[in-house]
Image (cartoon, rainbow, N blue to C red; front, side, top):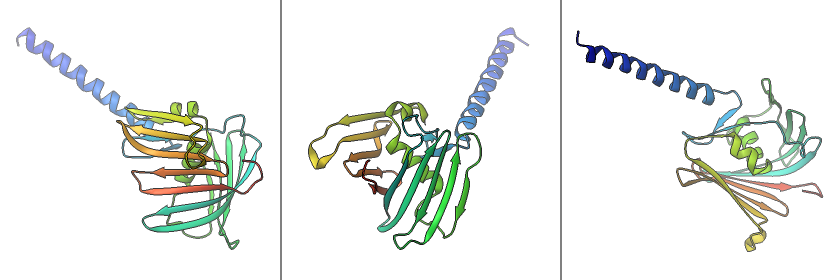
Length: 202
């Protein structure tokens, strides 16, 4: 067999091995139990609360608009070391769900009624996208061409800051911070969430 064919086979095998390793490493990243796919090609790795959040308890009125339907519930959230705990009730006081999310082990979930409007993972992801610092979000996003920008002190509509997540220069998620809470729009998945603070301090 000519030597150039032997060399060609050698490099073809090397390329195949490299490709398999690349695919497997990609699967390992996206299969992370703490990752949530924001789009088909973009995921967020959920992370422990930043130090400034640990020890805080917050209450929100959560309003979700999705496919022409709206849903509301009241949520109390407690941030702990490597843990987030949430309990949610309807505006009439009916328990809906509660969970404890852990950075190092499986989430504990109690669901008392069906939740057609959102999964627990997306609720946690959206909370982190609103509350975590931009630097933490940038480090937690998995995607080839993803970027995060934040613009502060916008005068229009009482916006304190606006945060934009782009994938391949396409706006995927837009978040706006107001005096009384946050509004998040997931443009690809077609839903909008409004978090209104029920506490005196935001």
